[in-house]
Amino acid sequence: PQWKNIRRKKSPLPRSPIPSAFIRERLIQEGKLSEGKIFHISNGDAKNPAERDIEISVGDRIICLKNDKIIGVRNGTRGKIIEIDDFGKITMQTDSGNIISFRSDTYNCFDLGYAMTLNKLQGVTVQKIICNADSTSHFDRNRFYVAVSRSKHDAIIFTDDKEKLQKDAKT
Image 1 (cartoon, one colour):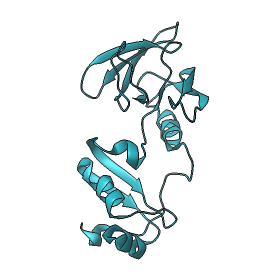
Image 2: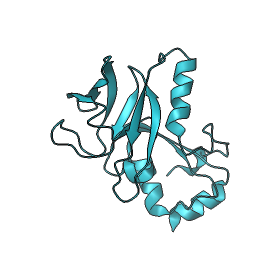
Image 3: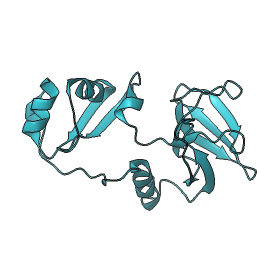
Image 4: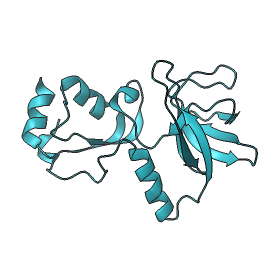
């Protein structure tokens, strides 16, 4: 890694469990997304189920959280919403180019896909990574490798303690 390019800088992302919602709100403010429709979603986790309502618009990025052979998605399938009809049918174009449609009352295991955890990024390639590695998180060599190796072009790492990040990335 080129440590000289790492600068101490506060992350622009809030300390929030839902950074994708923050990014989506910014896109709405910038006029890149319009107001959408409310959907009731699930995390797809049988052991620790969680449900909530989110707003989704045409143009939003989503990630599927559970395999479903009927509609043809796998846990981690990502894509962009290209249509939402009045009956709750969502059509997305996956990052691999496939067009998939599903009704939110039969498949609700999806979420906004603007930000992902490092665990979810394993095995994924993206254009750009923006990573928040603050001094309160344990960022060992394996997590550092996942963070910087998933990007085709850019990896931007925000940290409040450059020395700690360098030390943690070596262990």
